[in-house]
Image (tube, rainbow, N blue to C red):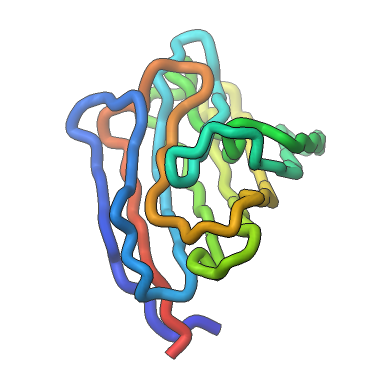
Length: 175
């Protein structure tokens, strides 16, 4: 069990942003945790997909398995050889209830190890106007042995994250 969480960096958007990048991630921790509260700007969608790019890699090195719940209806999908890690399927879109932001956490153990990197994510969103809820859990793999020194998040369907979206990156030490 981790004994210390240290805030490495945070970003609360004062204006919309097409992506959010964390760079120069120090190698002094054992694991990383990213906590997100975000909303996309696609006016046609209640929920969107959020993508995750490690070390600016857009080659086919990502695989994932996602389980989703929408109003008590469970679905799942998987993919391998992707050019981006696909995470949250529950990013509130601009047509969801005003000022609704999804909550999501991404966990990256052993981000410095010289092995493929497992990455997990879990979170949810609500659509109060229709009394709908969305949950998502994703297990992913970045099939590369390089240490993770940066990553970028972006909505897949819209042009940007909304004002007020927040991103907090923590380092974890086991000692």
